[in-house]
Image (cartoon, rainbow, N blue to C red):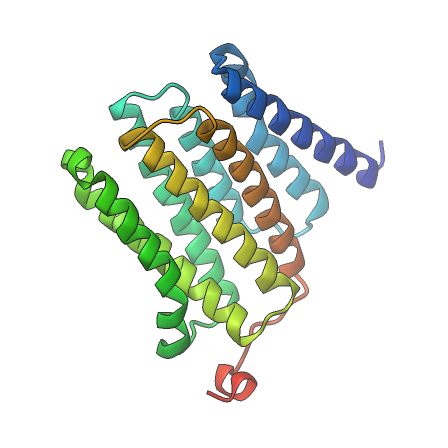
Length: 232
């Protein structure tokens, strides 16, 4: 089987598995979740390996830890939820390192402006669930700070240079942040049946969009001078 054909087969498998998981989450049917949820990220990793000659270890590690996290989130109690949240944090940390490696850190003004939507969302979520967090409060603050930093970095890059790569990364980060909002609200505040299918849909889409952006990065040079490009 040719390289392109296999990649298309893997892409189709990714879509099919995602749809099965959305359906399983809607029905709350655990057997399907236990079978198919562990398959989603390995399929994406295989797609990446098949289409990329120079593997970005930060991206692969981010997929590895988000894979562990989502296995932990299957019918998770409080302990497994915290383990899953910690692995989500590690995944985002490697995403942050990947972005720092690929892009220069913006000046303070665009960065601060870029953090505002993510800061407002984090404050809102914290206000809703603070009484339920218990010992996880500090960890939630640290994880929230990382999300805000990633959001600020990505948003600032998009403001300054809104090419296809930055657009894809921004879309991925926004969807992933929305997913985190739903996960936390669903676990700590109020669980609505539609939340779980929305979470897995957001998870699948955000990871695929980020995968596409990483592929596009390979031919893209670092932005060397933000001041010159934005007049800041």
